[in-house]
Image 1 (cartoon, rainbow, N blue to C red):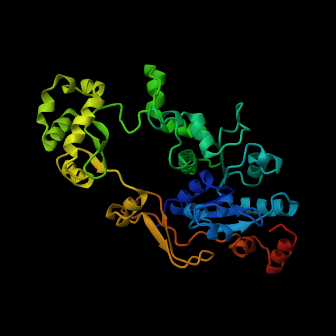
Image 2: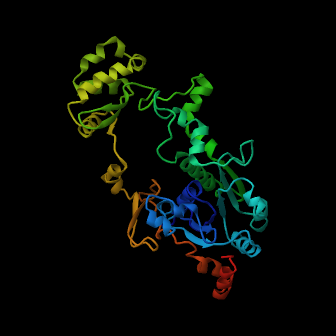
Length: 397
């Protein structure tokens, strides 16, 4: 079956995570994504990740995670011959994504205005830490910088441990997803052709909608609350006889079902627990009483029983544990590639979390080696093997 973005060509000039993650989604949705990389070194993510040998081989785990299904070409955009060749490639493209600091592409003479002159229908997406204007536009920005600037760290942890960094690159990830969403929308516009400015800072603030609105509308300054859900009680993380469990008894009927299942029905009649607001005000004492009952069984046992009666609950799992669960393994979320070139072994990668008509979108090819598709892509633009060899010798490719 055709995919939504079949026939769309995307030029991926991005590095590390936000941009590559954006283009990862576009590739899985059918776009031909050509990764345009720097000569000799490529995407910095090629040297990053938990396996030093793969990083040394320019196929780091961080690169493998976000680049399956893409093609890789190299070109030196600082050389006139490289720019001329790149412009020929732009003529064939529908979308270009870059995550350089604002002003870098303009200094190269390859900003939106220059590229639109050769491809008027081009959708140009610039992802940056703080956006393309404003007093912070030229600040360098990595994920942790954005986490700190956005307020995310100030509300992560509890009163004793905050501020804390979220345990994965949430700002890069949200920024990349925001860019992919905007590009998909722009592809549906008529006439096609636009400049998309994605600020990672603003993308993260948007994802904090409830927190931001509680301050803007209700004047409630956000606070770190650890594993407690401040909107209801009992709603948070609880100790059991074996492991931690999350319980979200957010409705009165769920509260009643929970106390019955734990054999503590008498708590329903206590004035301090009679209403949602009362339970919120006495959540610490309530948590201790519930944990006494939960101590009789494991988190997994309690989660199974509570879910069966309609109380949302789940054991707190590690990453290896959830990846080994049938709920993940059997839905096509992971895709395997055999004997990946440059890696020398089989690898499994996450896809997108999307299903289209019952199927998880996949891509047929593993992450590419640096410049793996030079002959294919540059050859299609008229370069002969001798031309490519000469340009490689001159440091252009």
